[in-house]
Image (cartoon, rainbow over all chains, first blue to last red; front, side, top):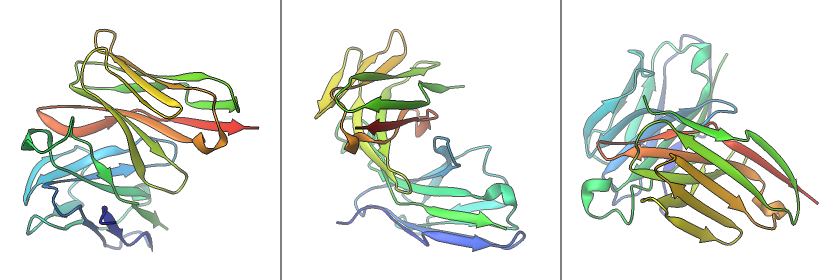
Amino acid sequence: DTGVSQDPRHKITKRGQNVTFRCDPISEHNRLYWYRQTLGQGPEFLTYFQNEAQLEKSRLLSDRFSAERPKGSFSTLEIQRTEQGDSAMYLCASSWGFNSGRAQGGNIQYFGAGTRLSVL
Amino acid sequence: ELKVEQNPLFLSMQEGKNYTIYCNYSTTSDRLYWYRQDPGKSLESLFVLLSNGAVKQEGRLMASLDTKARLSTLHITAAVHDLSATYFCAVDRTVTDKLIFGTGTRLQVFP
């Protein structure tokens, strides 16, 4: 099974520290998305990439957050100077993209298991 | 701004019963998705609905879409315990493929 994988699964850090998460998408997918999910809520969009280009960033993505997808394959999400409010599940998803011509009926996004961040 | 609302937020139902989860969205959308999430797990795609009147069924779950009412429903038939999970609807638009999720409906099925 070559689904979306995320690493680490859990991260505990102290306030003010930097953290970095990694996402490996399904290999054929050209779009990669980051979402954040807090307890009892639906995922909220953070940013997405088409190949290596970052096409959109949410207003939720403050300047402490940065995401990269340097070779159009895996992606990293870094949070600098973490705050307690950053505690959440960070989800990565990948897809073909609706306009790719390869999406089978809609732009189904396939999600990884997530990285749970706890900021103490 | 595109907003998605689900109700109920929590649903406790007995095995064998039927129920419907509702998903309303605020502005025109191109596609409507239903996902399932088990506790501590990621999201699993259930259905994608592309046009007005679309209906899809998988096992005991059936999803439908009314684009004029901006409403999708997820109908559960003869619930079983294995259906216990949180169900999310989400919408997106062709101009940007990001998903806008509802708050989710937590379903508990008891004997």
